Each structure stands twice: as structure tokens, then as C-alpha cells.
Image 1 (tube, each protein chain N blue to C red):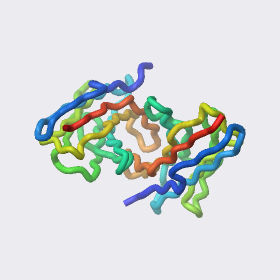
Image 2: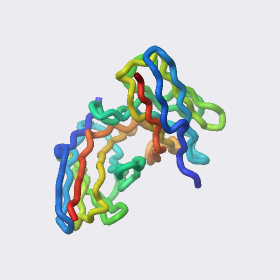
Image 3: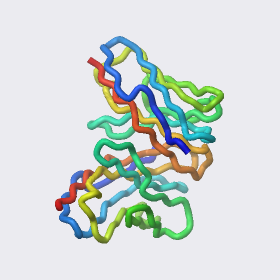
Length: 113
Length: 113
């Protein structure tokens, strides 16, 4: 099976802009989770989508949003970008059960200038 | 809220030395436990996981971890490290209440040839 894919891999934006990142899960996986990785805060959970519904949400402002499509592909959107949003954004997929392993994609590296 | 602590931020070892990385979590309920590894320039990969049963779990590349419930710990071990083990290691916890991982701060391991 192909792994989790994320596009684009690199992105440069300026403050105030918005950005959309895309994630395609492993075939058959119905849960997609998003994480932010920064040197200062480490890996932090953003949100999880399962069957097109947000099932869990981390402690991030409303500027961070996401959605999931019927084919389980997911997008996350960050509006009104701030310098502090510069990070590696990771997507992970799983079957969605309670004892499941999450498999990670390569990430999208976002730089906000 | 659950939290995960990795006490060693940086570890430097010579090849063939033994490795033990500490991980403690705070959550009173049932948890799933994971160790992920991030090699330079690569994405997060699963090393091993514990869901239930035998508290000593074996993973890939000769790694193992022991779940000690009374100590809320899930330490990672390897009897003899190799230069190729140079990477950053993350301990993560997922409570049964939700499919979202809480990560420790990571441990950067450097193995000198």
C-alpha cells in the first residue's frame, strides 16, 4: 500500500495570507489526524477527522480548520497567517478504532515571512 | 489532560553501547503507548507499540520497551546501538477516549562511530 502523502511539501507565505494543506491517507484508512511540529513546542495535536466529521480537537485557535472528504482525503486551512505558524505540519492516518496505530506522512514545511 | 515527559533531551553514545530512553506519562485511564523515530530528513516511523498484554514489547531494528503501569513509564531500550540509530525518538500516548496522540518532547540520539 502507498503511504500517507502530503502536498505541497514546502510552502512560503507572508503574514496575513491563508494556506491550505492536503493529505491523502493510506488506502482504506478512515481517520486523518493533523499535528504541528515546531522546535519550541514539539509535536502538538491539531485535530482528527473520521468519516468526514471532526472527532477530536486540540488547543489551537479557530484560524486552524480542516475538513475531510468522502474519499477520506483531508485538508487543513490556516487563515490570517502569523510568523509563529511556521512549522512542519504532519498528517497521520489510521483505521480509526480505539487501538490503532497512526502512520505519518512526510509533512508540509510552512514558512511564514 | 494527559502529558508525556521524556527526561533525556540529548543523548550521545558510542557504537555498541546500550541505550535506555525514559518516558513517563500522566493519565489515570487505559492508554496505548508508542515510540516513534524520526531519522534525519525522514518522516516519523513507528518503532513499537503497546496496547495490552505482555508489558515487554519488541519493535523493529532490535528495539524493545517495557510498560510499567505502577510507574506510568514506557522506557525504550536497545542492547547495542549502531551509528544508523542516530535519530530523534518520540514517546507518545493515546488514551482510549480519543484517537489523538500526545507526544513527549523528543530525545535526540547521536551515535558516534
